[in-house]
Length: 497
Ligand code: BG6
Image (cartoon, rainbow, N blue to C red):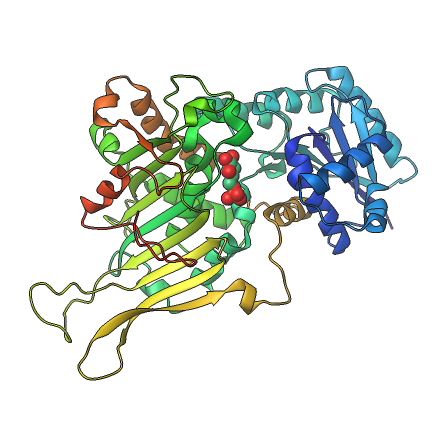
């Protein structure tokens, strides 16, 4: 029997992501027994560390920064399989050294040797990293599989994403490439698929005949913090909309695939992207709002007259049989009142008011809230008769919460699931080449329109107060359509902004 050994190579092994997410996730998986037997972690970064120094750096850093809760003895067991190679992503010789070290570690195991390369480096280095992996002979699959996980942002626009895709595909086949969007690793995001496709009662009403509008909110209370340099070049659309929010939209809107394999799932998701309406410039500017929180210009790394938006709201349409003319409202921002990610499905109002009559009666619609974080669960709002005489009604909430529903199981970190899937060769929760390009095709025209000086009058950059729900112009976007933003999840008392 051949012995398989597997190594996760973290390029950028001393960086923030490795400390915060990757190593803690691998450690947790190891403790749960969810990793291949004897899995090794080889970190590659510039610092001149020995294996032991790196292990100590991680032990301290992952606990302080990554919130790792580990017993020293468990850590020692895990860290014994962790190694360090000092090198430069730009330098092909460093990759020769990496190869030498990897081969050395595999020595004695005559069987298969699998490698997962995790590109946790600055995005401008993705291409170079992939090129140098290939040049050192680290991509060939003679004695085991080779896979590459590529972090976001994948490109800066359509052109750069296509260029990066071409560079990656010179080295790896598409089935070896795992483009990550950590939102897809979230348990509650995957639950969207189960909610829709493992229950018979929702799918028949999941369309334009019953749904009035869909709202996707990903609000963050944090500011840009120490990421000002990156963020100012990126802005909210590249940082959040192009990836996380559009991913959520596709999961809400996609058709059911015949089977849940990665290609079938991803085909259906791409179809949604392709169906998103492409409005002309005027309509595009009218159906989107941009904002910047007060004080952003004083953040480290931010240009003093920066026009980078930290908030965006927009209305999109999915032009297909199921969704034609149902608005999908998206909003996301930094420095907002609360951290909350939720998807709200607002159903149409009852066609006829039976219990209350008169021209002023405003019937409430049923609202379904799919709560992604931090209140993980599902809420359904429906009308209930107020006890007593007459037929007075009130809206009540039927809720499911993960923490009370699954008391024993804690919700795993997104990176745990994604690393485990990449190691198992399941790409369902990773982004395919065509999806990433389609997503850029949707946001590029808006970014372009906003960057045009002439757009300032039609689409001003609204200032908003930190701790608020963003610019009031985002409320107007909905009120023009006779709607308001809805909060369904958590303990929010206020509806709307
Ligand atoms: C990242 C963005 O992709 O997602 C960050 O770059 C953002 O700006 C983060 O804060 C939000 O992720 P989560 O899991 O905290 O909602």
